[in-house]
Image 1: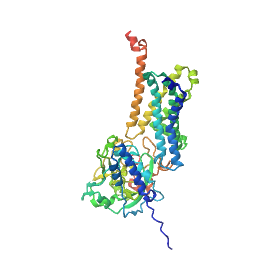
Image 2 (image 1 turned 60 degrees about the horizontal axis):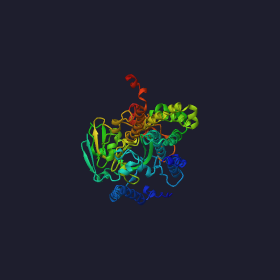
Image 3 (image 1 turned 45 degrees about the vertical axis):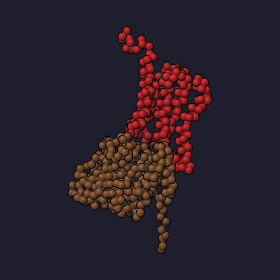
Image 4 (image 1 turned 90 degrees about the vertical axis):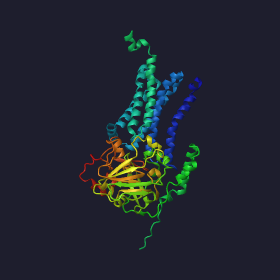
Length: 216
Length: 315
């Protein structure tokens, strides 16, 4: 098992797998706009791309957040090797998601964009999610972990919780009446964040807990 | 001078009917394999889904300077929550929807209430083709060659009484045929309403077909309302009852989210949906957005219906 997890080929394979949704969209876009099948991305290709990339942002955020619980539950510390890649893929799909909206919906119009960000709460919260992912992507390298010192780096990277919560709310506020999918993403996120709270309580030495102090 | 008439090209000439039907049969078969042997049933009802409509005249009230959207866009990108909330779901889940036999009751504040059978629906008034822009409240649009007749032709037959001020529309709902409806998140059966003068306006039609054929089930077969200057959701599908009323009837989206969807719901670029702008729209098939027109471009004909009304208040 360790051999598989440490092999650089596993990383290459996982990297390519994560790229498949993007490849599908590129292929679909080529067929729709330059190829033989104008319906390859459905009748509303821009919406299709926006929704698909949006889905993959949330999925990659949830995958990223499940690395730590899985590492603990499966006792496989080497799983951490893939966490940064998943996180960066979430950021990558978020960037595509944003660009499609900014270029094809807002047509490069900054004032129009800001108006939307300030006026529409689902866009406000979506932008918040994207904004907090930017420092995380920048400081994702080993060099930055060293420069910030691990403790501070870790505290900064807890912003990923904010990004995921913002993403789920963004989706929930967007849909008209059928909230099943946003609620499903929210439920998985709740489990992943809940695990961290429970795990932290279980592993913190009793003496460090405020309640324990009072009892002592 | 003799001017040769251009040959009449039918919509079905663009995508041959056989090809279209074969594709459906293939989809039906694929669904059948997945659904363990329902293939025959699926493909047969799909074949019965639409038939060619004869004796249709082109209406002078058709929208000028517009070209019909692709039949794929109009028939595979639908909001029909009884058959699922995804845009592609109605085209998939509505294929076995039974539209014949059918009954449409027209009653309420009328002196001559009437019950129409499936065959009657096509004989209420001469059928005409009307090319209309169709603007969804979600800020996308299409251009549809509807086939139908003015709603006022029907209303005149039932003779509204002096108490009639509004028209209420109720649509078919049955969870056996529409199991996805349970998850729609809106109260069903779907209800809509118009003021009587809106209902009597010559642009308001009941549609029984598009692209030269009867309506596909996902577009609201066998009969639906089309009000081109209002957001698409006002056009209630698969009508089973039309009632004339003395007070303003309830409408489904207005009940579900009154701050987002008003009773009037006229297309208005100046009044945003609380969650998105209505200033622009994406025409299916276009890459970039275009400006949305007041009353969806039908202001010359219909703006007078609302003179003196604050359309920001009565959105």
